[in-house]
Figure 1 (cartoon, rainbow, N blue to C red):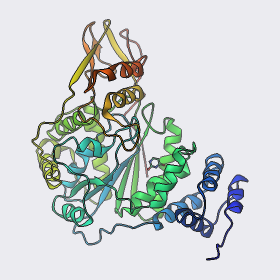
Figure 2 (figure 1 turned 90 degrees about the horizontal axis):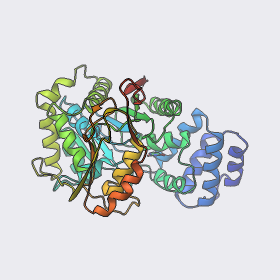
Figure 3 (figure 1 turned 180 degrees about the vertical axis):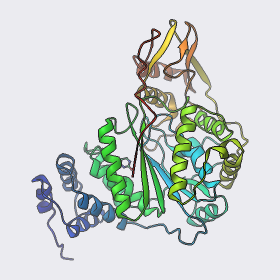
Figure 4 (figure 1 turned 90 degrees about the vertical axis):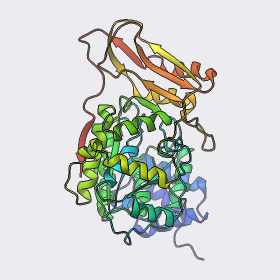
Length: 429
Ligand code: URA
């Protein structure tokens, strides 16, 4: 086969701030996927993109080329409309768990292909796998049948979707080129568009516990992804949401499932309920359903769908969830107000307790994690419990405490509480 381009020429185009054409990008991604373009050449290319950026057409071409590298799911045979959401991830972000059944309880299909966690942001599948019997791996036929019968499915994304992204993402991870907006946007959207959903709501987070900490950069990422979805004919919208403080009170796996069930039972922490309902409203609207989702959390409809969803994947919704073998309560050392409680160190501490993994092949400990007893703004007395750490091995507590040094502060009444503003900062699209 005669190759139509020389990869060195293409690298020089991006190095010198030029633009690549559609045929050049199509070839680059295809040649990289089949191994003709070497990792060191693609590393130079991703670094040039990291430093010099890409135009809207280039980002669209890159996304489409990554979609073309694998299979595309087709929901046209379903009797229901499909609507999906993607979160860029945060600390205590269990929103998919109550959200998918809530939206599905309105007769819309929610095909949620999720991942496992790496580092301080947890993975939806890790959380659900703390339910005895529940399995993430479904065949295509099982996936489609459950979408039709229950409406909500949360399962593992197969490696057949956008395989070029899998290879490129692994390369970016070891070459310091993850944080480039054109590369992140095309990576996320290639998988979401290949999934074939008709509507998509993005939860793009900013703040200390977010992947994109700076609000302006998070907005740029959201706008880039919304433009990509629009170009691909997907009904799409993004919410920019605050991740300076952990979401809800539970950070871990089994404890996050417990908190999600509380939300499905009409209770749960106010921030988790607010974000779940806001995202559900957007997902329903994009799917053409003009109804208020909030009552379905209170009247049991969303809970019924949750139970059906868990059962359909082999889980027992009534089973006792794992708890940690050892716990340690951290208490207030003075009277005052909680003025600071930063998401990132709490995410890292939960990870060190065993709730997350450092390497892809590591297991997670489903009972491990942190339960907060207070959020910023809470008035406390000396000796009141602030949070409980849970681990199976007490040797893990010391490193969790190290991560939490300086992560929370009790101040005087009247001091400014640093929660970084409203939970939902903007709506894009
Ligand atoms: N998540 C992805 O899927 N891709 C990125 O590039 C970053 C986060």
